[in-house]
Image (cartoon, rainbow, N blue to C red):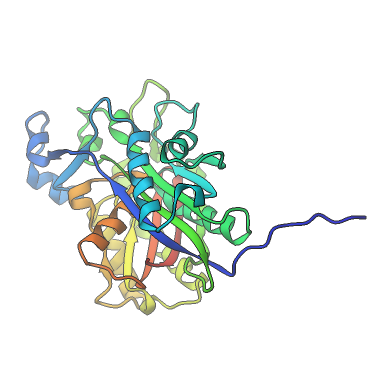
Length: 325
C-alpha cells in the first residue's frame, strides 16, 4: 500500500513581528461619570481603568484588524505574499458570515491563503498563537499572521455600569514564523464549560452580561496554576520569566495573579503588563496590544522570555511562554 506524503516543518517557531491599532477616540472615567452613576475613583478602585479607546460607528472590526495585521507583517520584514495563513481571534463580529479573516487577508494583500476566525473570547489570542505555531511546525504554512481584534462597544449596553466602564475596542497582531530553536512554548489550555453562564451574550438582541464577582474569584484562583503549567511545559522555572502579559481584564486580577506567581518563585523584578489602565479590556486584542505598547515604551527587550495567559468567556483559558522579537 502506498503511503501518504506529509510536509515537514522547522524544529521550532517564534514571533517575528508585532503590530497594533487603537481608535482615536479616548473615553475617560470623567466622561463616563457625565452619563452614569460612577466616578473616576470608583472605576479605578474596582477595575483599575483610567481611559479606554472607542471606535467610531463607521469603523469596523475588520478595519482595525487590517491596520494591526499590516503593521505586524511589515515589522517582521515580510511581504504579504510571505504569509501562508491568517487567523483572526475575535468574538465580536457583527455577523458570523462572512468571517473576518478572509476579508482582512485580502485587504492586507495576502491572496488565496487559508483564513479563518477563532472564537475563544479573551483567551482567543493565545489559542490562535498556539494554533499558528503548530501550523508552522507541521510545515502547513511558512508564516502565519495572528490577529486579535474586537469591537466590544457594538455589544455593550452603554448604560450598564458593570460592563460599559470595562470594555473597549482595538486590535493587536503577531506573525509566527520558523525558528531553529523553540521561541514559542507548548500551549497550556482548556475550558470550564460548566461555567458558561458567567459571561455571555444571550441572543442577537442582547448585550454582554457578566457576573463580575464570580469571574473575579475564578480568575484570581484558577489562572495562576494554568500559568505555572505553561512554564513547566516549556521546561522552565518561574524565575526564568522576564515579562508577564496576562489578558487585561481587570488590574486587580492582573496584580493578584502576578502576586501568586511571585509566591511560586517568579522574580520580584518581573515586568507585568498593565495596559488595561489606558486601553481598557479589549478581549482577544489585549495581549498583543499590551506587548506592542510595552515594546514601544521600552519596558521589554528583544529576547525577553514572556509568559502570556488569556482567559474569559467559555470559560476558556490558554497560556504559553514566548521569546519576544
